Every structure is written in C-alpha cells, then in structure tokens.
Image (tube, rainbow, N blue to C red; front, side, top):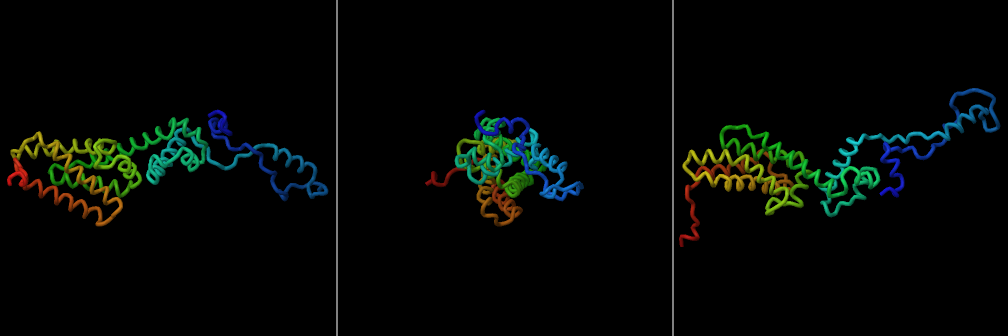
Length: 260
C-alpha cells in the first residue's frame, strides 16, 4: 500500500499542491523599467520565486471525520445503485476523488465500509419505527408502523434498496429479516395485551406481530418501485386488511382443507 503514488501526501493531510503552478500573468500593476519582454528585472525575479513556490490546487482539505462521512455517503450511493458485489474499491475511491489506500485506512476494505453503511441504515429505520410508536390503541399503532416504514422508503430509497437487495424481506436470514424481527418485537407486546383482553393465547402474539410487520415490509418493497397509490392510501389499505382480519380473529382457527 505504501508504494501507491501519492499515498504519503494523502495520509499526511491530503496535500494536493504537489506541482508548482505557472507564474501570474503580466499586467499585475507593478511599475519599473521594462525588459525586452515587457517586464522589469525585479518583477521577473518575483515571478520566478512565485513559480518555484507550490500553490494549493483549490481542493478542500477534509478532516478524518469528514473524509469518513464522505466515503460512507459515496459507498451508500454505489451499493444502492449497483449492489455489494458489483461495487469495487476502485469505483468508490474514484467517485470520492481519493486513492484506494484512503478507503482501506478508514474501513479496512469494501466489506468494512458496507458493514457500517448497513448498520447505520438498520439503526435509522429501527429508530424511525420505534420512535413512531406512541398511540395507545392497537389499530393506531398499526397505522404508525405502516406510515413510518412507508415514509422511510419514500425518503430513504437508497437505504431501503441496500437493506433488501442482499437480504430480501422473504429471506430466512440476513440483516433485513433480523431488523423485521426487532420491529415485530416492538409490536408484540401490544398484541399480547389485546390477545389477553380477547381471551386468545398470548403465546401467539409473536407469530402475529411477525406476520403483520412482514406484510407491511413486503408491501413496502413492492411500493418502492410501484410508487402508486400514495403512501397514506397504501398504509390505509394495509391496516384495513390487518385490523379487520384481527377483529374477526378466531380463538382456535382451523384449516378448511383439513375438515374435508
């Protein structure tokens, strides 16, 4: 890594003035006896000294924290656009306008950068949904979950694409399925109280919370590209199906196929 051209300069404050720029053009306003090129000797000497002195190139120097955030933004955009496998370190570095060693320095490689991006996205979505759960009535709670997830999809499309691309909603394992479980656990205790009030088996509250949150998440994945109908209408239909289904819930349901 240390053989990479310019690595020492990048690590040491991201210096960019590695080559001297040409001297200022004539006509600076200084006076004197002009030489044969229209400059006096003093001005010519000053120009030579200016030419020998490196000048900044105009690129903004970033702190370590700023550079890390920039790489996270670049990585998030590329992972959403192309997926993990199709995104390369070279592409990340090129879009961030740094050398590859800078990416390695901050994250150890593409895998490290991806892990941080996914973790941040999971936390952002989880905070969005759990923070929205304020209603006391179970139906309003379902509305809050549906609206929070759909709002996240609407405003953070790149983030949602990252979460579901390599770990789809219907998968048995992976980051998104574990996130769905975390969200469902927030809903479970609400359902448990409702089940207790209605005389249903409270042990099944976990099953129903997984089913309800999974329904919203899977619909959200479809809505990410469909974009119709509008968010509130999608949420209303989801809650209509879920709540009206719950309101007519049987204490001990059976399969009609098994009754033949």
